[in-house]
Image (cartoon, helix red, strand yellow):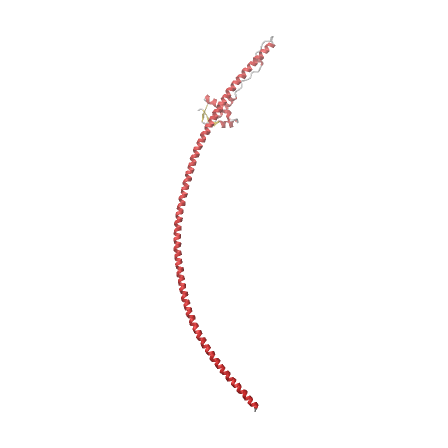
Length: 262
């Protein structure tokens, strides 16, 4: 009996615990349902807020994009206009600079041509002056050398004459001594005792003939320098013979060249 009561009590306790658990589960289900309802409401509210924020963000983004696009377009237009202005100014500056460069080059070319002409004229005038100076110096030097050669020829002629006189006096003294030494013998003229010498030709005469021959062979004229090379002799030695030929009228002279008399 006690056991049955105990089992009955256990069954009742289990039943009461089951009912309590069911009651708790129902309460829990109601709470869960309430939580789910609140969650759905929160999700719906969050979705509405998200959609509203997304729409606001989309509108703001579109507005920002439009604003930025307009700003960029304006910036590009301004940049294009400024670039066109800068390009136009650069083109004008470059055109002006090219004009200045062309003008400077033209002026430099004109100055260079003027300098070349002035240099050529100066060179020509100086060349003429130098030629005249050299010609004057050469003519003066030639005249001095010819005068010296003439003086030397005269002095040489006088010396030769003195030598001949001395030789004749010496021969006369020898002949006199021979007559004194041999009074019995007939005086023999000294001319028979000493071999006669042929009169020597003056060196100037031979040169004179050679110069005359060269001049006659040179119808286009020949200078003393060229004649000296032909005769293998220093040309200054030909001045005196050439001058004598000029005096005799056998040749003629034009500047520094000698020509045959036509």
